[in-house]
Image (tube, rainbow, N blue to C red; front, side, top):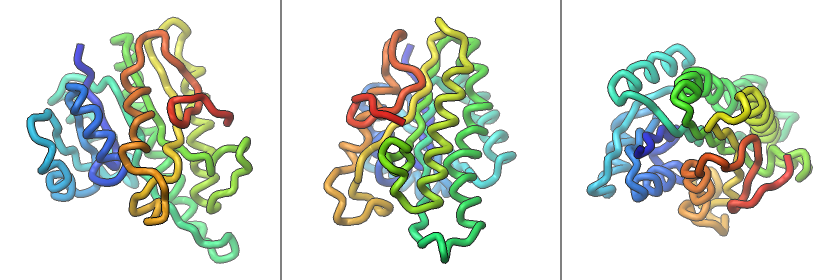
Length: 229
């Protein structure tokens, strides 16, 4: 079975390289992004691969649910979900508006959960599913929670969501739900001084998405190695 993969925030940066990576592996890839035109431009140079653009706004839970229902009706199923879309506000806490914390939580946690809630039952029924949540070391208690407040606490919440959902799946099922940190990557969010390429940042997500049945579940990874929460 060739997996069908859905990647949020897939029109640029790490997300686009995740799309490219799965496409190179022969997967059908659904590229989720806020603007369909941006997605179509992003994949112009991905020649000979089966990549489709899905317009989705993670700030609107109902639209997310409706979009997934339509996507599954058209493509039959979604086997791999990569919750990659992200936002970052680096204001100091004294200047940080509560609305920005809410937005970070909506994109990183609420939107991710809405997608998982829609897709996980089908994965369980088919006994096959991989969910990869794009987190960060800045959301790790073990690494000191040193990132910008809204980003760090929402990524920590995403890690908690990962572990809780992984633990909720019946043992023996071929379902794997994991978080990962891509490292400091040279993207619009990461900045020009970041030492890692988007391709390097994408490698672990692709690796997790293509794991065999007895692969990891409920773990946190960087560079394909388990790290602490």
